[in-house]
Image 1 (cartoon, rainbow, N blue to C red):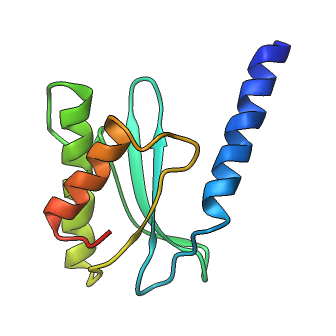
Image 2 (cartoon, rainbow, N blue to C red):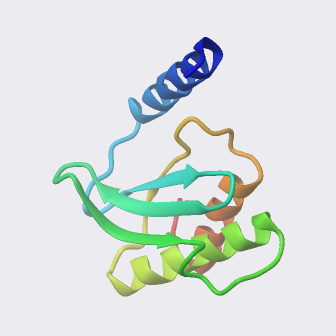
Image 3 (cartoon, rainbow, N blue to C red):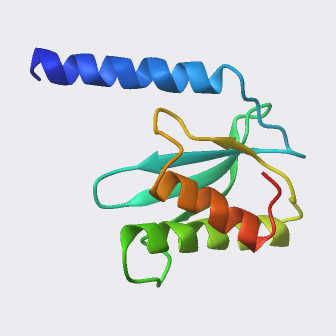
Length: 118
């Protein structure tokens, strides 16, 4: 691993730590965490008090096709549907080291449209 790549990963980890230091998820109001890669996007609701994932969704499980932003919106909507079925109505959004823009914002919008209060 080159020095520049290592430095980028360290800066991303610091950004994620800075974001997560202000956010805590509980069973009543879990943390909606987003993981974005070049090909896929994943979202999960996490109860930090117990350290468990309550509900998860990804683009591999959603049948939506089209632009990546549209697929991310469908992932957020599917996650919200699962959460509402499990009895959750609120969540705290955790963008990690990513900017609230594009696919990350589309997940939040889809979750709101699906019935979650973020």
